[in-house]
Image (cartoon, each protein chain N blue to C red):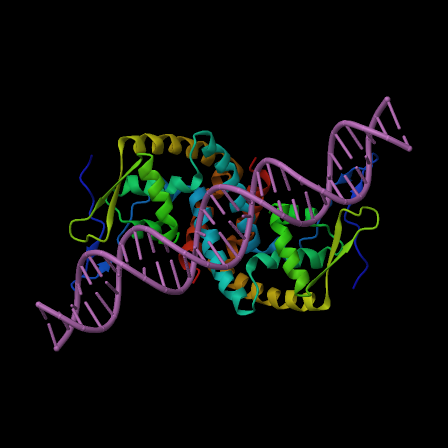
Length: 162
Length: 162
DNA sequence: AGAGGATCGTTTGAGATCAAACTACTTGCG
DNA sequence: CGCAAGTAGTTTGATCTCAAACGATCCTCT
């Protein structure tokens, strides 16, 4: 309808220059910016944890098992915010690599009790160090003054969105 | 190492009661809470957009095309924060359903110029209405006082994380 | 003009995730 | 006790995503 906007400018060499894109209302919406921020932070942490040979998805899993020895897979999936079926291959892999131990419960032989092995605790410790470095970067961007309030808003969103 | 914590309490009926899980340092980390908040918000919007028969992933795509007629797929993927290869099936589907029009560029016959059809604009409009309702819910949770600052922090994270 | 290198979009392969169907087991209730 | 209903974990099928390799096209430079 309206005239088409020129999106690709070219510099004197003819190389395309990243155009300025109109985000419209997206620019002011929380949902969109939440996604962009989360994905940027995730990618950054992904690179970090790749250096120590772990994927970021395993990190929360290891931490939750370490902090809650004897936890079941269903409880873990709830705390972690993923479907229990997603956890099956993850736990399988962690057990296979000797980081997590899995025992049947006595009272309920459907369920497992998960706990870290010594190797798992070591891996967790090195992931914690990587995570702390990552957090320091984020803290630097957020600023000490805004941090507590920002975190509080995030928690409220996670808890209160229907 | 330390004694195992009792995770599953049972009520008088013997039914398991959601246990209180120890999140350890995760509770205070931005990265983890960012993920939880984003996923909660995404799920909520997912339900909303499902009502009008669209997936949330298509929403930003339609908006960016509508706001930037003639945009190429690569520019779109950059603005949208997804790999260009992820866009191939999405655009294919939007074209097939008559929401998006795709023409070869004159100057560069490798690239496409994307634009919305009339039907695409209608669909976008109804998604915008759904998004506005979603945003109102988020705004209610965040609170008017914190909103601007919260949004600013999100933008800084998206832009500055290496 | 023509070779070499860059870029656009697609294809392919791998991985993560969800939801629903399934199995083993347990609980509730007559 | 014994059957119906519920629960823990797995399997299966679908979707979304990325990264790398690829063909077609474009640009640069001689």
